[in-house]
Length: 93
Image (cartoon, rainbow, N blue to C red; front, side, top):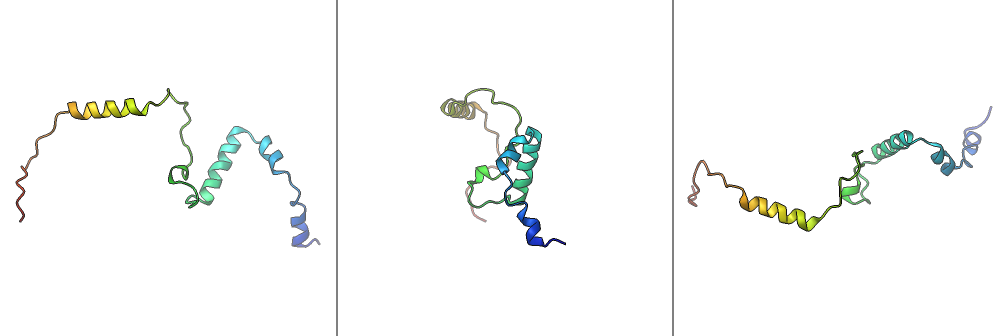
């Protein structure tokens, strides 16, 4: 009968890089998902990197932040403001 320590010794010299290279893209995605579930709130990562990327599509084009901000500002200025149902009087109850 072998001891627990001897059982663990056979896993000491495993080449992890070789195992990872042999995995298919689907298996890598599954491994990534399982690793994220093990420690989803990794406090050392920025908040934007804590959740795995769930998008499968490629980017539709380059992001021009300034053009986007100008478009949103223009759209906000052109949008008609809705009328309040109860007018604001500024009085305190």
